[in-house]
Image (cartoon, rainbow, N blue to C red):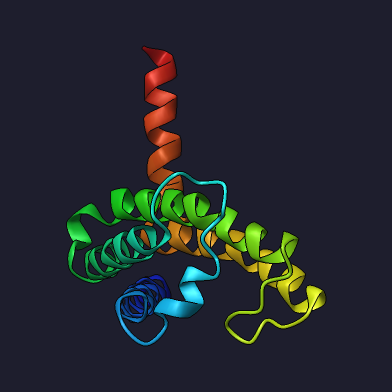
Length: 138
């Protein structure tokens, strides 16, 4: 389906853009989102997640044969970075133009959209259900 293809490529471009931003002009903004409770150096977290986003973005675009698996990995990545958004909301951190609790709260509701986007546009949802079903049958 062409809509799924366009949305998969769009998500890939979005991820690559964000990943390059992690490494360059948006680094300070992303540093503000790194939860204070996590044990790693915040700069390392920002740089590593940026590299992962670039690789994921490229994968969404070029790994059509493995798109379902990439979609699942992408969805898991979006879940993994969600604590950064929660951290920004709980500690009232201004970043990315989110300078009010209302704006930060609204942002929290967009992360599940990214998870669904990754799974739907790649067929990851169906792939995961088939794999789980065959696993249960044993």
